[in-house]
Image 1 (tube, rainbow, N blue to C red):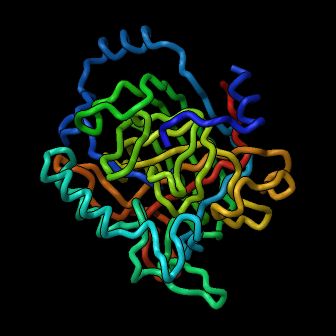
Image 2: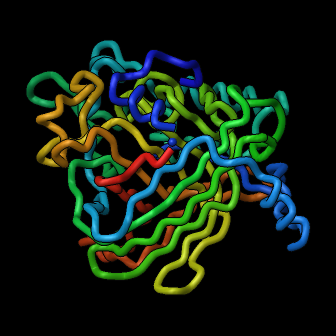
Length: 341
């Protein structure tokens, strides 16, 4: 994923005018990721004054099309997951690789357990796959990557500083890449949310290559090994992986919450179906919003950063699902975004 690839024509035009859920990571500072968030106000002000202009800015203003993605099943792309007789992108090899990395001291000790709790970060267990009448496969268990969305209100702005083109060694928070992001939106019941990125991280998962935690102009997801394979392989204008805060109805609901934002080529069609690898790239007449070749995904995962690394912890949103429980993640789609730079 981290390797540069030829840009699509519209992407070249965007970049010439001047980046979602699914990764996880250890947090910074007290939780051992290596990012220092305890600098004084004076030092912080000096750093801001000296900070260069961002390499990319993406945003969406208020009163533009925004969706809240509901939990639901996900069709499994044969190009990524293989067939019932020849399955690919399974969980067991990823867990084994994580256990070996932990034993070698190269990965936080919590990662193998997290992959068992939330396998869609890296694959889909064979026993979780159902075979369809036409011989295809589907993950019936509710995922954050369904074809169901509800229209909400929302806006965001993200700034990206891409200072390295590979994941440097060291703790997840040890990276020169930086990003800033604030998003505000509602849920389908009208509750208010504010999500604020604290710092960028390199997700400590087997196979992930995130260019230091900020990726500009490249592919990820699908069969790349970076990001959940439930998303199709997608051309990415700008993306970050990070840890931040979630505020609900004006109150801080969660700290050290793992999140992923990406501005990508459009992957949802006129009926809001999420494309598979085989269906990409979508034709312009298939794009959800006429003339809108890209959109931005923000996913806040059921993962929290701790001293021992990322752990599974459902997010307590204020939106109640039909089963009476709060939705444990947020996947927000900003469908009329703008690439400012």
